[in-house]
Image (cartoon, rainbow, N blue to C red):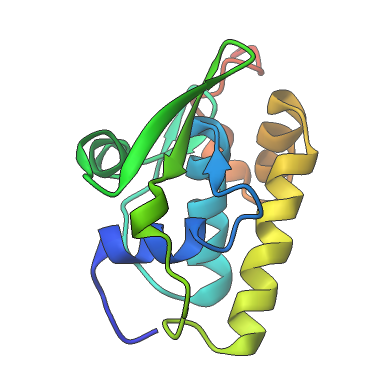
Length: 136
């Protein structure tokens, strides 16, 4: 990955999703995990009610002209606009593409709570503000 532009990174990653669409929680957790695994820093994730969250990521998604909103079964999803889909994704090597696709599949396979809990298990510091745990 050569480009350090956050919006391009988001579009490049979401272009690899089979349906080009993820929910806000899936996106937050996906990009948190990708940063940890790929060693690239684009965002500033902080512990939030449901684990790692970066307001800048949400702002980019909300104001990007490359991303649209969908309502799928009453849940908002972000989806890459058809004319913004990266068809020749040279931003990632084959190994990175495979890994990103696996991570997308992972976050989409879990329920909301399962996804949050899997993050907390591996990154307990992201659970400090969690609404899933009672503070004593």
